[in-house]
Length: 371
Image: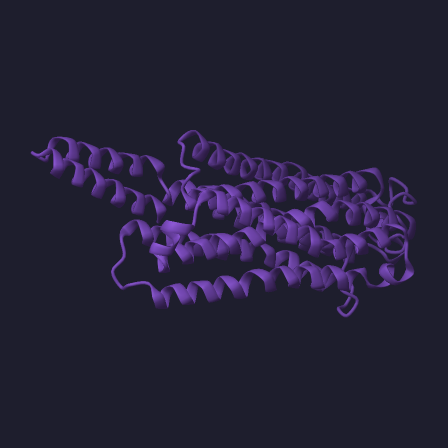
């Protein structure tokens, strides 16, 4: 997958350079006229170059983004279904993973809907006028603003659930007795509900801004780029510092000798956090480049950055279920549980000893499952 992604980046870069070279080699009268005003004889090369570049972006955005988003959605749903079928939802760690997978699924769905809506807008109108022209640019931005409301809410919920998952893992590892007694799956669901309530309350400000932009409020039309930039930076602030603090506190508090399972779970938590934050970096770079304080970039470059930002976002959420199934294998735990039952039923001579062993094995198994 990494090789494929690097190959795609090289292809986009070379194609842009090729297109830029052809643009500079054309005569000066071809620079200031539009594609629709050119005759077939004078503008054939420029039309072909523009059509080729648009085709690459459309294919990348429609097929690659849809395919990767479909895999991410399927993987997260399979994680939830697998936990539910195997009756593991009663375990706090599994309950937290399920809540995170559901929030990731919603983020993927609404981000994909926003991508498809903006792509249809570009298809319906000329890409140059849609990204730079006055009337079609207004329509494009309106569609992007309205579809950004559910996308931002779901992404905000996904990032908050990542912090919730990190906090639960910290409590389970650092305070095992407290978590064993008080931390249940029902409370995890209540915490998830609180996270969604906080998400809707905080996202109301961004929702209001998008609605005002759609109604063409002059202040929001002039400052919406700053609102986008502040929203992306806000997602970093609510995710990166808490995750780092929880990880450092957990490293300082946990004992030096840990089981392999706890180490793998810690590794999974770190990997998910790092991948989620890295998947948001291209979006942050895009909002910075589109801000009024930076030099304006060409429409083709905007298309490239949008495509890269969307692909990295979907790739990041596609990696989450891969980490779930790679590190947190349910079958291994079930085999350990069966070994405990077999040892206690066949390896102890007395009834009282067998009862004690059964109690100890259940306690050990619960501790293993809890971690």
